[in-house]
Amino acid sequence: MPARGGLWMLSRGHFSKINFRPTLITMEITKIPNKILAKKMEKVAVDDIKSGLYKGLISDMRTAMVENNGVGLAANQVGKDLRIFVVDKKLAEENNVPDAFINPEITEYSKESDEMEEGCLSVPDYWAQIKRAKKIKIKFIDENGTKQKIKAKGFLARVFQHETDHLNGLTIKERTAEVRLRTDLLSNK
Ligand SMILES: [Zn+2]
Image 1 (cartoon, rainbow, N blue to C red):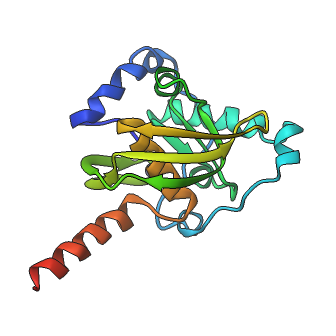
Image 2: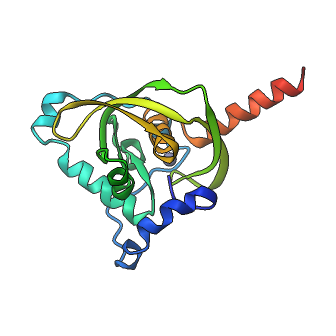
């Protein structure tokens, strides 16, 4: 998801230095209605993670995310049917979590939620208020092949939910439609 507006401004500072670099696009970002964005991504094998098979891809995804001013990027956003996402390095460091997530699954959502404007590199020129859980728990495998389970809250929890949505074939377009549908149902009562 790209950084922009409102609380998204918080993440903007991360990119101020990077933006002075010459831009070199190495991977093309898939855009809707590309079918890979509507598909649930396949889990990868732990042995392949341990053998370093995905190191190159993860590195290229980090580069593509930075080049496109994103705070997160899922593998299907670069056309790969793999259950992997990366998040902004500084955001990860601030929260003391890894920046690459393999086979992630959100295992718990808080009942408490909030709304924030989100954008997405795969959904150009579209911004919407998206309701998300304030806190989550996520299990995943790290780049070294180690299973981990962590808690996240606030902006980090939102990014994890946005990127996990991608790996489940959902974009902010579907999330917005869902909110609209709920609102319509309520107004019909
Ligand atoms: Zn996105």
